[in-house]
Image (cartoon, rainbow, N blue to C red; front, side, top):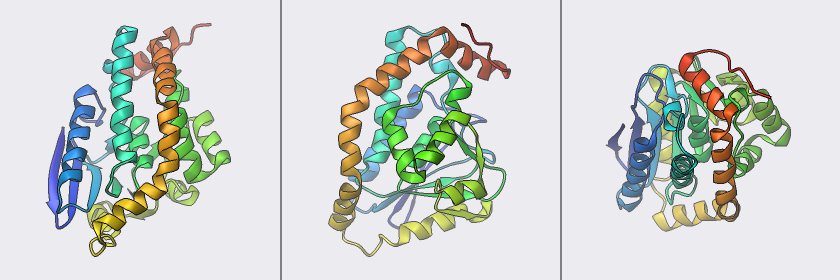
Length: 255
């Protein structure tokens, strides 16, 4: 599900699950394991998170993770994904997300939780489609999104569920740089290079300084975020929204 490669002081983690790189329970377990191993590698200073796919970085959750499941099962899977994504946000080492294609839903969350984002300049989209499938949005994730693009753009992205193209993603601050698909990893490595000559104590300390205010928010909101999203997924409209993804149709909402 994740390939692991080394390039000097950078570890490159590449998602490879299925044709749309949708994510399930095993993926989140493996992601946390790989990040932990990279953090414990004394020769690793930075991490690149990308995907081996011509079209998708990640299209979000695999709906089968939640369809027809009990509340306890849904809560457990949501909690696992929340904690796994938090490992990106609060990693001791800088993470560059190399977005090779569509980054949607929890795929987009992993991207904004990274320290830097490099995106291909064509055949890619970045968005949060929760409003289209009857789901809500975690408050901690919304806080990160607001920090990146401001409250007005965050509101527009969430309420419209619009998937923006690369040029707009750069313009509003969702990503830091665009590049040709064939230079994605090379461009991402340039963002990593600035850390190669720094002492690891400085890198870690500076990242803590940038993230600690978010850490407090995440701790306070984790239980509530997990509960509210689990209830939304379990609801009839949440289940209908997820089924509509699998069946490739528009959802039909219940009053």
